[in-house]
Amino acid sequence: LGSQPTTFPGSRFMLNRNSNVTRLIRGGIPRQPTTRRGRPFRAPLRRKATGAQPPWAPHGYVVSETPHEYRYALQLASAAAGASYMLGLRARSAVPSSVHRAADAYARANTERPLLTRAVTTAVLAAIGDLLAQSVASAPRAEASSAGPSSSSGGGGCDLRRTAVMAGWGGVCAGPFNHFWYNWLERAVVLRNPMHAVGLKIALDHVAYAPVLVGFFAWTDLFQGRAATPHDALRQAVCSEHLAPTLRANVVAWTAVHALTFTVVPPPYHVLWVSVNSVFWSAYCSSVSEGGSI
Picture 1 (cartoon, rainbow, N blue to C red):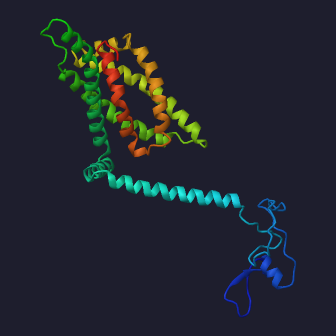
Picture 2 (picture 1 turned 135 degrees about the vertical axis):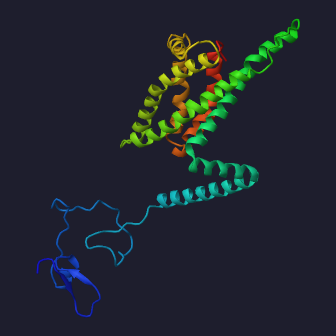
Picture 3 (picture 1 turned 180 degrees about the vertical axis):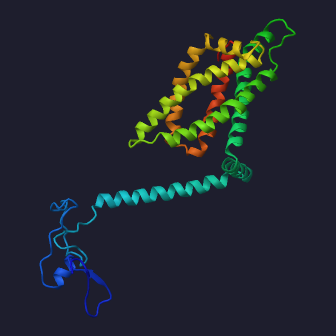
């Protein structure tokens, strides 16, 4: 019969002939449990219980009680989770409904049309970063003009062409690149140690963004009229004295940001998180491309 199932009279279940329960019913001695490799199984040491063992305890095992400190820790964790949930509900009720509708609309668009949504988001935030850079750069000139004689050049106006160039860079180049780049990182970089995966993603991002910064300087030189052809713009960008400092600033600024990008932020919102942080980065790059610093 071998390991054919055995049916006992009056029972509604079937047991294996070699199981310990079948051996007990037939008056035999339970076979010692073994591992998959045939070695004797040794149960881990457990604290002996003070009371009688429950009827479901296996033969030769001692069921221990849960230590008091573990129970207290579980109770504290449950209380903290409940308090966080209630605070979240209170905070959600305090936010206006229009903000909820806007967030839901963005989440829906990010799911249905991710490429277009992320390109538009990057373009808008790049334009905001350029306006921020222009406002910071024009503040000293405005103070100097108010203190000295008035001049027709002013310095308080907004360069809409420069803002349009930055918005075009964000919508045409940076947004689509971020969309495909971060999706590829999530699929390609899968390591057993999560921290090693995060470090590798950050290193790859720094390497990939070196040519992106070259393209940024070439884009601004071409559309701002500082280069006649794309070849001249690319040559000026590679030989620019601002490229090396910008690359160093990129490593310093984005290492901490990407430590949160690849650990806390969900993958569908990587581009949004990067674009929001790029407001200040775009302000910096826009100022550097114009020959200034902020």
